[in-house]
Image (cartoon, rainbow over all chains, first blue to last red; front, side):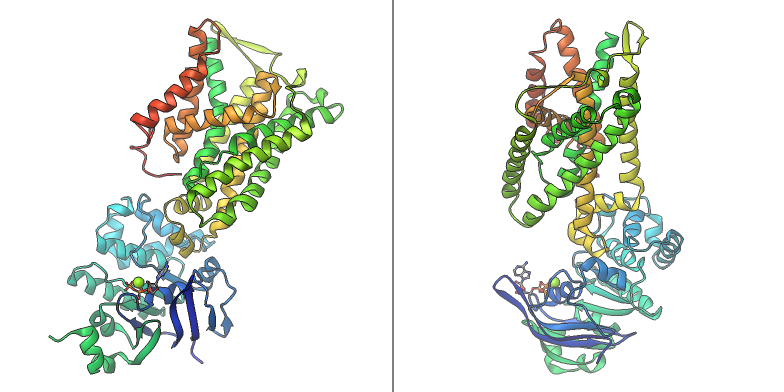
Length: 237
Length: 300
Ligand SMILES: Nc1ncnc2c1ncn2[C@@H]1O[C@H](COP(=O)(O)OP(=O)(O)OP(=O)(O)O)[C@@H](O)[C@H]1O
Ligand SMILES: [Mg+2]
C-alpha cells in the first residue's frame, strides 16, 4: 500500500459523476503528476483529497489512516495542503497577510515568521512586494504567492492544481523550479497539469486521467515517450 | 448646540454598535440579517428582566448596570449563534433570496416570541438604571456619568473590534472568508466556526446597544428592533456596507444628523426618520458603496 492510497473512488456532483473508480498511489518524497484534458476530473480529484468533495464510493488512506471523516480544515493541520486552480489569492489582503493565513493552523508564531522568511528567500519577488495587495501581483507572482502561502503550514503532501495555467514559458520554468526545490526539502508533491511537458519534466511518476479514471500510468520518463501520451498531450513538435 | 452634539454622539454609538453586526454579517456571508435589529431588542428585554428580577441590584448602581450589560451581551451573542446554526447554516449553499426570506422570518420569530413573554405594552426601564443622576456640565450642555461610561464602553468595544479584525489570526480568517470561502478552507480555517464567531460578536454588540438604548430612552418594546434595525442598515449603507469602519462612521454620522434635525425642528422629532431614510435612498441611488466604499477595499 502506498503512502497515499486512492482506491476505487467515485465522486458525484449531484447526478453528474466526475470520478469513476479512480485508483492511484503516491509514495513519500515523490513528485507525482496527474495529466488530463479539460473535464477529466483533475480538480475534482484534488478537492476530494482536500476533503471539500466526498467520495460516494471507494476509500482514501493516508499513512494508514482513512480520511473519509476528516474535515477539510483538519486535513491542512495533518499536512495535506492544496494550491487551488486559479490561485485564489486573497486579493485585497497584503502579500504578507496572505502568507500569514497560510500559517493559520500553526500556533507557534515564531515558526510562522521563520517559514515566511524561508519563502521570501525562495521567492525574492514576494519579499519586494510584501506590503502590496495580493490582487495587484502578476499572474506568475500570484502563483508563487499561492505556493508560498501553502508552504507556511509546512505540508507533508502538497497538492498543486495547474500551477502553470496562464503563465509565459519562462515563468512556467521558474514555478516548476520552485516546485522542485520544495520537493527537495522533503515535501511530497502531487501536481495536476494540462501542460504535460512541464509536468513530466519534474515528475517521478505520472497518471493519465480520462473521464474520471486512470487510463495510463508509469514513470514520467517513459510516459513522455509513450506514443499515446505524445499524441494526446504533448503534440508533435 | 453642545447638547445636540452629545446626544447625537450617544445615539450614534448605539447605531454604530448595531450597524457593526449588520455589516460584519453582510461582509462574511453576504446576508442582510433582518433579524439583527430584533437581537438588539432582545438584548434590551433580557437586560430589563435582569435589572428588575434581582433584588437589591439597585444599590450597586452603575456597577450593576455594567454587569447586566456584559451578561446581556453574552446572551444575545449566544442567541445570534443559535439563530445562525438553526436558520442560516442549513441554507449556506441555497440562493441568496432564500436566506433573506429566512432572515425576515427569523425577525418575526424574535418579535412575536418576545411579545409572548414580555407582552406588547411599552416597558418602562427602572428609574435607577436610567441616565439621570450625576450630570457633568460641558459648555452649554450636560452629560451624565453613566452616559459617559456607556459611550466609553462602546468606543472601547469598537476600537477593540478594530484590533481584533485587523490584527489577530481569527480576525484575519474572518476577512479571508469574506473574500474567498473555499480558499480559506484550504488554509485550514474552520469556516463554520468562524462564521458562528462573527454572529456571536455582532449579536453581542447589538445586545450592548439594546441596554444602552433602554438606559437612554427609558422605554422599550417588542417592535423597537424593526425601526432600529432599519436605522442600523442605513448607517451601514452610509458608511459602506461590509466595511467595519464604515459602520462606525455611518452610525455616528446618522446619530448626529438625527439629533441636528430634531434641534432645527425645535424639538419636534417627527422629521428625523424622514431625513434618515431619505439619506438611505440618496446613498443607495447615488453612492451605493457608501462613504468609505471605494477607498477601503477590504470588506469585513
Ligand atoms: N461544481 C460542479 N458541478 C457539476 N459538475 C461539475 C462541477 N465541477 C466539475 N464538474 C464536472 O466534473 C467533471 C470534472 O471536472 P474537473 O473540474 O475535475 O475537471 P478538470 O480535469 O480539473 O478540468 P480542467 O482542466 O478544465 O480544470 C467535468 O465533467 C465537469 O463538468
Ligand atoms: Mg481543473
